[in-house]
Image (tube, rainbow, N blue to C red; front, top):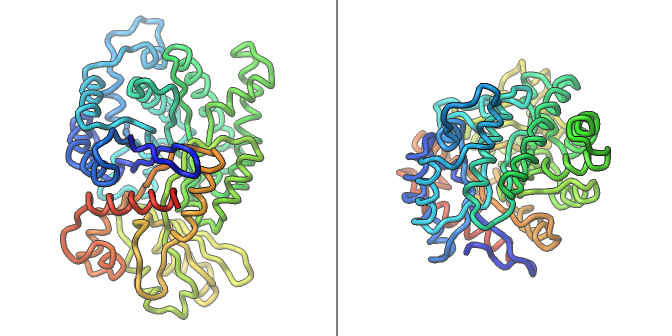
Length: 439
């Protein structure tokens, strides 16, 4: 199995299938055979391999199909009570045939993740919308059906909303309301199936709780407080039990690319989470782009500008010379005078960009990735038993291929100038992550 020995423990290492376009169950089954199985064999040999499945709303609907409901039933009743349908049985058979087991699920992007333009729609629906609750509950129910003998797992999800919409206290309260509604349903799912399915809130630049300070404040001041207000009357439990229930089912999924964009030390983040009693249900083994002294490194600046592409959001955090930070929603904001608000390139000591790049990738010159901080973080997380779920999540291979065709020097360094062999690249990246974990 692709549980690997790491720092005296056995941990799961997988990669997320969100890199492969698939919005229906049939498309996902094709992906398992065409991509996931060959990559897993290349990285781990012929044993059963772990996989981090990306499931979207269409797939969740298919996999949770139910018949006619009694008039008194709610949608959550239907989701929790429906037996595995034909689509779920087909998916289980495909996993078995390809010698794969589901370690965790990526439930962050639930709309078409490979649409021509995704950008801020990746956060839709936000946690202010009950649709996020129902879709996540469906995904959790599917995961419970796919786990086999395993008793627990997690679904990574957004933390709340995109800050470009709104992120005030009222919005955070609304998000906490729907998150705690889901907690109650996940507890029901546990009672019905014997499977513990947690959500892993995943901080991302320009979203709710993007820095660790913001996340801890959001978790404690909104989610835990609302659980204390709601659960005693709803479930007949005390305040301590209410907090324990929220902490059990609401965890964090720490993406190393995202935290690096925020200039955070991932090891220190993990220590603080442990001190705060916040469970980490997973770590995304990933890297971002960084450029020191952009005004002086013209080649690096031009390489970074050439990485602009229309599909995904590439938030940027700039470190100013006084040690403060300026945040930008997307890469083109850096050459938009209105967005710069009077700042000049010379004002920035460093730029970090939310562009997931392969862990093994190297650039000539000043443009670099944040991969240097990855090995220490993943080894610490494994050694300390903070999580046993490690997921490589570079979903940008297809846009990198497009950028390479357009002449981007950075993209060409990674994928060459022609057609990209995604499977070969993923094998190389998973092996890099494996070496980083094992040291």
